[in-house]
Length: 275
Length: 275
Image 1 (cartoon, rainbow over the protein chains, first blue to last red):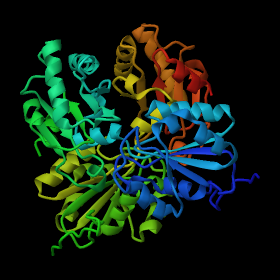
Image 2: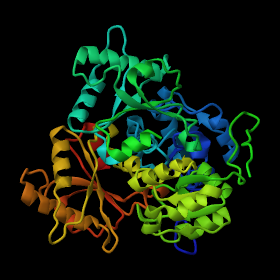
Image 3: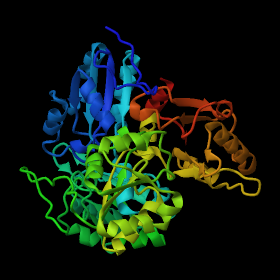
Image 4: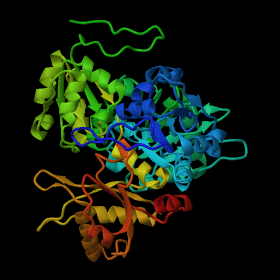
């Protein structure tokens, strides 16, 4: 069953027809809850026949999918990590119907989305990406630090008894040596959950004991953006904290969070962080 | 005139009351047209008393503000660059009423937004930021390149008779030496407009003649994402081009665009770009 896509009077493409077949749409809902979805994202969900969601590349605040179901008037099937990475559930549906996968944040930042798109295209399934806000730019914006002054980003992994990776420390050190800030994403573990800001600070201080470059001392001030899924997108302030690592160790701030390790601050950055 | 902000039955904050006073909301509409705005962004515009917009930190596609006016049922005043940077128009309104500034992309990536927020807060005006999709993450997503493999981003400035800055070349070279990709934003000039992809390629090749590091040769393949305001957010594919700089010189692709200079590609990145 095929149908021509229509255009409106001014020549713009109309929203996807619900009758088209064989498609996969990755629809981002941004860094907060269902209200972070764009109008085109919402149209896409209304137009697609089968709606799935995943909530492991990032967390979705409680109740998000239930409220989104009400907005679009149809059920959403939450997939496990295995089901998303296995690809079968999604691709078998997408061969013959219009399928959407709702994802937290902006799609395609997670490697698993890239793999999924490759597999879909190889099967001749057309793919659409519907963008939304991402922690990559929102964190920069909320911190007031300049986008041009960021180096490579990195995830701070949990330290375990027998596995204490130093990669985040090395990236921070290299960025600092170039005068660049670092965006530090915090690990999400299936069992331990998302890393707390206090745990992150403790790991960073432990890393310093191994790395010994004197870059992450107890008095080193960093930017914490916490409780992100509730915060910035709703315009609530007070989630930003410019504090020393030792202060952060004692912080009761909630995940999901990111930590920004600033290089030497410019005047405007300093002024913003002091507000 | 003050009013308590309400909460809904489940304890979440309600949309901002239209009666609150003295506030400034920066509302992003994302990388495409008005349909890139989030549901919370749209609620915010409906709740605010005075709506302004700017279209110089990025371009807004033609008709965007007119269609947005219809969606929110009130007029939007487009400000000039001077008016936004002068801050007076916005701040004088925001002292006594709820003011929103509609911005292209995600707010706060442009330094002018950071300055504005600092000035507003100094006047005791409460500030809200409503996030939306940003070229920073959308470009990474559309390219299939891994977010963790990007170094510092940089803007490619127009070359003029007496001013031929090499900063973009230096950043690309440094990123490549660390095995990192570069996101290259293209200059927007008040008179010349947004830089064409073909002009960007020509400047990059000219830079190589000065820099002589053999990193930007005619056969060097780069990723072009073009016609961005119409493309990815609407799920239209075919705007991505993985081509050599000499091919790009002959390209008729339209701005706004970004160019990504890849470092050595990983297998998955290569597979995605070959699709």
